[in-house]
Length: 119
Image (cartoon, rainbow, N blue to C red; front, side):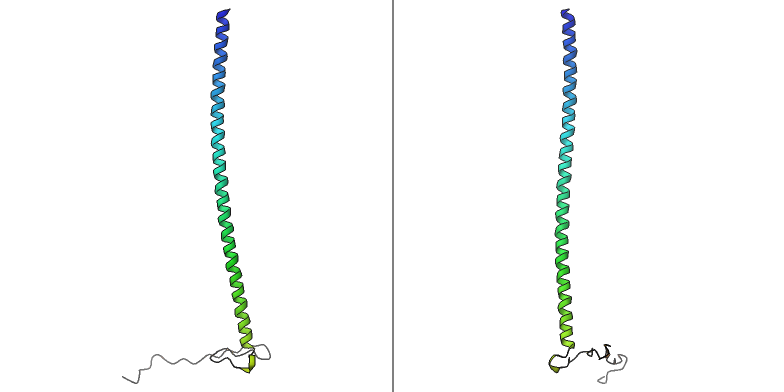
């Protein structure tokens, strides 16, 4: 009887030790999974932050480009309007005609094949 109790206790202890080993292994696996998930979350946040900064930079560039185009169009309109009855000296673009057509004057090219007269 005492021998049987001793054997049952040893079996019970053995089962409990196996359970402890399984739980420790499970806990280690869970900790590794948690660390991996935290690392992936951190990487995704960093990626998101980089993309937000790039988007802000692109938006700033886009806004600057739009503002630049708006200024140049405004200056061109101001200049084309003949403000103060002044002509656009040196310009090859004539102001728009009454019909809205744009006339472009193209200067004649000089031949580069002719010999210089100083030789």
